[in-house]
Length: 87
Image 1 (cartoon, one colour):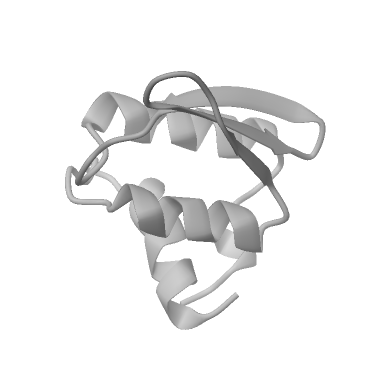
Image 2: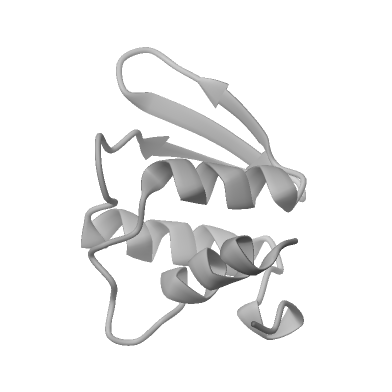
């Protein structure tokens, strides 16, 4: 995982929540973590990682804060921690 991917991962877990995380960068991080990403009907994106599945809304620009929280919980459930990927 390169430096840019690690910065995005840390931004997802940052406090306070960041409202400026690019969805395409998040998709790149998920792909780097080994996730399977499939486009679904409308602006939905399905993600499978470590036996867990989630559906997220494909944001046109940056992720809304609610999506950041959902992404954080999904990654925590998958066993992903930013501490495993230091900047």
